Length: 254
Image (cartoon, rainbow, N blue to C red; front, side, top):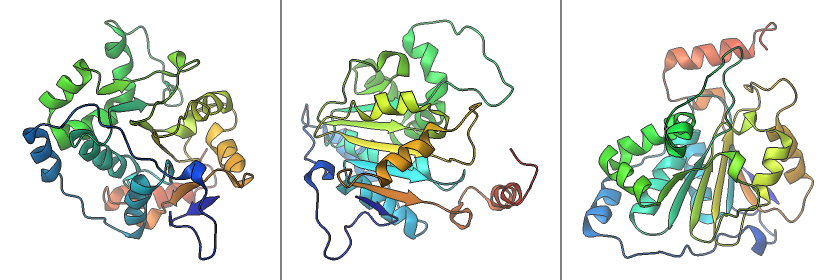
């Protein structure tokens, strides 16, 4: 059962074990420095939806953060992930984003190892982690495997194990097949957040995220929190908010 804009079950509703977040398994005892880093990360929800978003991340195995750019869908998720990985509450942070360029854009061959090839797609998430944790600590976590950027190419046959936090950003650019593969990798004890804006996809056909929402709505067994941000929740700036509203009202917008 999906709980929109409030991860708490409705009064009288059943709690389904399949969606309840299970305790994460810490691989190591966090260092004093990492605990201090985690405690130094301050977060004050800018609006009720950000508050519900953070609560869902803490209480649900699956959270969907939907809505326009600039509302904090990625930032709120990265705040939770940064604090959790530093405190040892999660063993691994997996960052995913479909390798789809903006409409009309093309990218050539990218040199380097796997991380060098795929990290540009995860740049917005990595930048937020750099700000929250510190670039040097993020690099160390990438090196020791605590932070991983995973392309969809390597997803089939794998699973998101207990203690893993997975952030899938820009999910509106995922195909139906990609999201089917993604959601069937989820193991008990992992925590998943899917963020996207169904009105802003760069696919030639329908967005897989729209289909996923239909799948969730049609199931009584999928318990998750769905946060639906609106234009009034935009925190990036007044001009960003004005453009989002203007594009929404433009009949010629794609």
